[in-house]
Image (cartoon, rainbow, N blue to C red; front, side, top):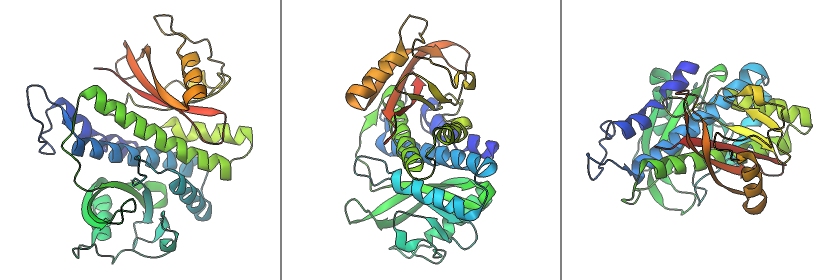
Length: 325
């Protein structure tokens, strides 16, 4: 599993550091490369899908082992983890054998096989997804479907990858032809981190509200879910969860902090960044905090931009960030 997960995040990062040759990016100037809206959307859906598949696989191999409980978990997560401002971003989970729907925002599809479904152009896009996951482990599939946010038929680019222990696959995508916007590295990474963190926050919130009700159960779930999630090619992307009193609930990169009160944790410049995060979440619900922190990929102290947001219906907030260029 870890090999597949690591490989699934290679493409967007190669895009950034090599001037986008893999996706034939239409960046305006190879000397000063920027990231187009199209490539940014591909980054968002790939990293989102990879993160959720990783967290789900961690649970399936340690905690949730029967198919009924697995399906219940997936449906609750999918129902809650919508992303993009118009909520057009959503997940679907199906079996690799005949594409029986395990979880989907359209509940009428649950328990049905989509293997013979055609898009508006007659393409068997679900078959293409199954083949992509079966033979490559992951990848993008293009097809045409109705956008739930607009009701219009649009091109859709979906990224799919496996949940190995269940022999299922998970996917999500984006619709239409994005506008010709371009972003700097820092702008693009900031958007990826924000969308990824919001997605996981919503999904975890739904699970904690409906499945794990006791405090110790919640803590164990959060730690298991974020433990193996790493994104960006160098693995510097990870999640942490803290409660509003400053107790570290889960820490993907530094598990030794779990259970500790980190309210007075300072960076190398003396910034009480946990206090800043709590203050930001209390006042605004979400936002970005910049501080200096050790990059687990390089071992160096670097400037980190971290997005934090409240996990719905809890006194927890979740954060993730990137090290600025």
